[in-house]
Length: 187
Image (spheres, rainbow, N blue to C red):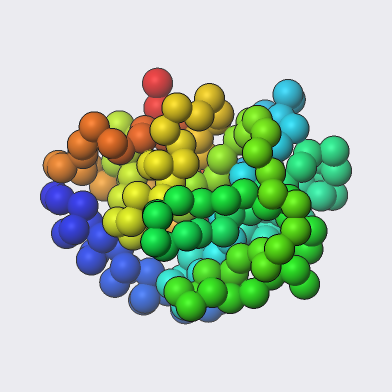
């Protein structure tokens, strides 16, 4: 299947999830996240969920990191839809966020982060067994991850699709993908 076909299917699948089911899926993802090795991890990039798109609640991950690894610095993105690039900001709490025109919670201002990133949590609609993902199609994360030495961790509400047929040279492969009931590792 192509990215476009998979995207339509995944968006439909998400639409069918109730709020309670999404909450349970998010809790399952947190359980898988908590099993990861955080030794040597100092900075984690966490995408913030778009509620209207039925994305997993990554605030659970942020809160868990604060409780269990308080020395880990969390950074969150702000998207520039003109350039399709993201700027990272040090996360200072939900009160410093506003919803953008596109329904994305983003920091209004604060400390821009330009340093090393040890782990990136990547939003996706679907992924395949080779570690490639289907996102919303704007390429924000492929641009961000290009040339970045980091652990790339996809966050998926559902298991993998067989194979994404139209992977291209710009698509960045994930190292790991978390689902609510399993961790997939890609070599």
